[in-house]
Length: 455
Length: 46
Ligand code: SF4
Ligand code: SF4
Image (cartoon, rainbow over all chains, first blue to last red; front, side, top):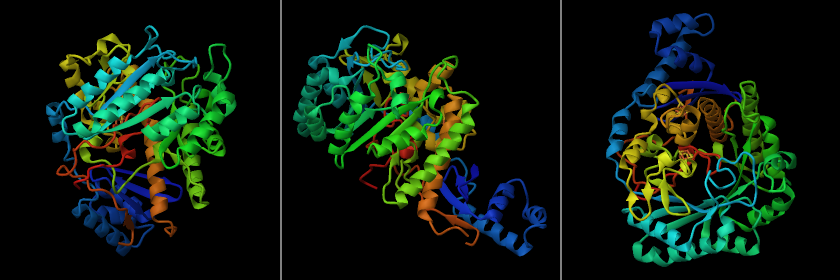
């Protein structure tokens, strides 16, 4: 399968099943488009009014050479292995610990309904957290790198337990031959020097929630009195980010129908000194006034292009920013297994509630029918686990003809579920945005890998 | 090759990979929000 597109002056051709990326001239672009449906003679004829025959034949030779080398028009060899995924081991390598089902902000778009996940406020005890870590170690087989996300609600509302759990994990790491990587996701309200110091010692990653410009951020991210949180959190996060040094952090935000000019928000964050950025489209019911509309779509595409070009410029100027969706590593990216299986929700990644129940991931928490078991008895709903094992890109009918499938791995099961009622569905609007982002990301790779290519 | 320039990409091959040492990759807005393409392979044996 081939996908070809033009962006920022480049003609780009992707060969889906080999992962190859080609940059071609105008003739190459046309020849590749005609190649599958036409004989060489027909191609020569069709292009005769614009290109000399010898040129066209040259180009066809190039295409054939690449085809023979397995870099163009390659066949799908991966479908068969995707069915073996059901036999996949039950190793668990990552947990999302819901240490606090409560929040000190009252963000109106929060999928977790103010951190309570449609339930009661709750705080995870040290005993539950400790058992969760033991459960992870016991079920992690030979995997060495284990990930634990401190999530909420707002995890800093249960900070002492977070610190105690980190200490506990460190105390067993050596003997169990594991390496814990912790992530803290926070709204910033309770960030202080002590939090910053501890996080810099122990957290591999810190996720800071900011939506961008003050008016955008304060529209949703308000406290219980309805006051915006921007002025309170920005200085704290600035200090936090600066103190991270070369440790990872990133600022993540959500854009909605009300700020379809979201690059302004990203550039605002860059002006504030944040360089590691992520901004995601809101996922909500279609009748929600902030839901993205069909009219928004072309605007959003334009925004992604603006962003890509601006990031190239910033990099040239020596002041690069990172946008998470544009991070792509063509030469050392994920293996084919990873590309097919995706996020691992419900299989290698599980969420743990404050009282120790297991769910496929944080987005399913609170939905009783997705309860998978608990940290004492393990995964008892094995049927559900099997279902999630098979929710890979090959199990989704909508993904069958999608060129982006090995970049996407079938998307988010939770989004699919919320959009279509089925974890094997797809959130179509999200797909279109995803594909646009991949086109931009690959274009940036092209631009950076062949700067002198304007011929 | 005059008309086509090919970038260096990782070969997609069933024979290597699947070790599982890489990071999980949640795509949702509230977490890491990245697709698998964003990820690095962490296989030390390759
Ligand atoms: S972009 Fe959509 S259709 Fe394409 S692979 Fe991802 S989920 Fe499937
Ligand atoms: S199902 Fe979606 S929200 Fe859940 S872990 Fe996967 S990508 Fe993230």
